Amino acid sequence: MLRITVREERGRATLKLEGNLCGPWVNELERCWQETMFCPEHITIDLSGVRQFDSRAKSVLRDLHNAGSQLKGNGALTSYIVEEIQQTGA
Image (cartoon, rainbow, N blue to C red; front, side):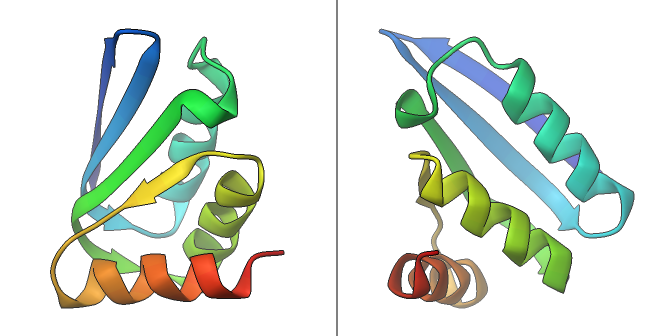
């Protein structure tokens, strides 16, 4: 299960994710990201509350990052995933 909370303020949007980012929930993240009415450069994806990622989730996060969105995370797992995506890029 995954919870996505969208917070919009001062011309920016933050998608706060909590739970497991795998399986059908990856599609839900994509849908939510696409429906957010901000350009990708003004979207931050907060992964701090994500407990599990699958390989497709990492691929989608890489695509969102390459489109201009910022990834944010803390803790060992999310920090590692964010750093890996930022270093590998496209």
